[in-house]
Image 1 (cartoon, rainbow, N blue to C red):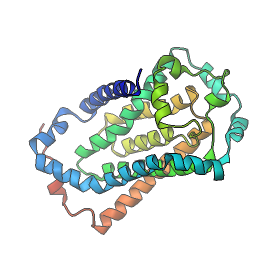
Image 2 (image 1 turned 120 degrees about the horizontal axis):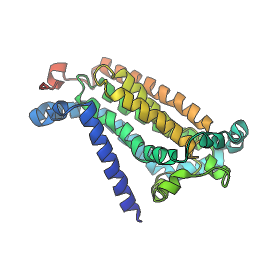
Image 3 (image 1 turned 60 degrees about the vertical axis):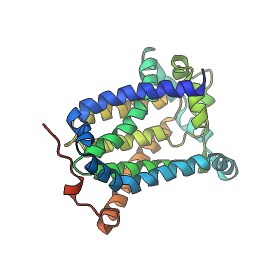
Image 4 (image 1 turned 45 degrees about the vertical axis):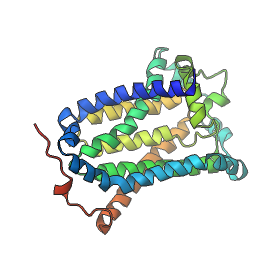
Length: 286
């Protein structure tokens, strides 16, 4: 199966899950607001555009420098694979054995589809918030996750558990979704595991869900379930060490702090916020 077909299948599955979450957690009335008030929607997009540009630039730079950073990593980076294995031993084997075999289907689904839905939902839902603050924080926090994460990938070389304990640790995702090997190998390398960006970005999304609970109360339990499941799946599937996850949790929290700091500074400066709340507010029907 070609990479294009695999990507298409993942995109369709994720879109279906994301669409259901948006209808349940945001509601048709909010989602239809841009059709009723297109000018307000355009002003909202304009208001968050600088923060979106920051995220796109970080992703673009990371992608463009991927091969260069890998080469630099082998020159200046510290290989910590042995340290991680020495600390944890066969903890992940015990973790896998703690779950029934059927858990492989759930965690594989979460890792492939749930993770993307968890990250994309805030970028869409928060566009319909009364305030755009949480959306701006989300965009900057995601950029911080990727920026710091790639820097750490350059400084620390670490192979994942499935590479170190081959034959001892099962790889259930590749048994359930063997086609995913095409997609993961195209966007990642097997030494980019410390820290776990799946964990850090999921923690970021969960923290933001708690911050926006009053406005989107239905999203909070979904976010916590998906986020926690993603964190566990990274270890259950043999992709990340527990240490990767612990550092990922810290990175996710730090990224939210950075997002809040940057957005608050930008709002106080007034340089990127020349529209008042009335100009950015949707009139949502009951």
